[in-house]
Length: 193
Image 1 (cartoon, rainbow, N blue to C red):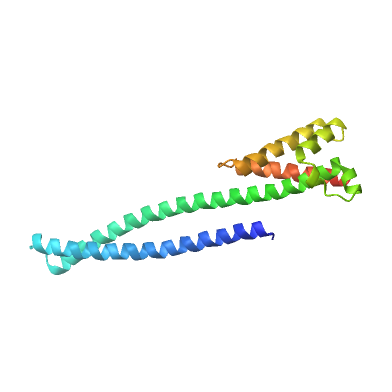
Image 2 (tube, rainbow, N blue to C red):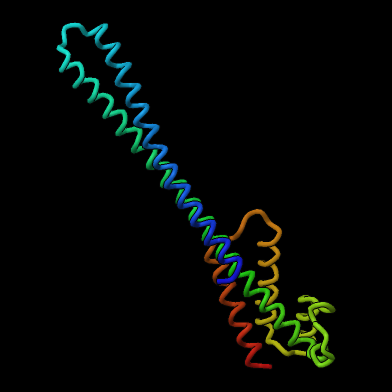
């Protein structure tokens, strides 16, 4: 597990712990609210419903409080599930984006090294002197990749820029599809070199 995966795993654990803590606090909140409602209900009922016996009055108030607690608990549980689902989807998007950026970085290094082997022969780091766009143009000019592979690389470059600079990520399926493409291109370069 690399450092970024560990960070997202840690975030996932913190979200789960926070969700459990909120659940416990919500139970205490509802128990407090129920106690308040029952006490207030008993005071009001004993004042205005004088023809009921004490046992009937307590049973009516307990039923009312139980009903209120059940409805409120159901609504809170539904809201918490929806919120947790949104958080889970966000974490999945971040994890998918992290995987894509990892493979994109690997592809970028492979493409630059493949396009400029003379830099490696001179024992220079090609990524210091060349960039991905220069490498793609070099591969296009020398016909070292098929045109659809060049288009794939350019699409990967656009997605990388979108993930790095835009506030809104694309759908997970789009990110995963581009991650597979990056992985396949890395394999193709590795077998061509």
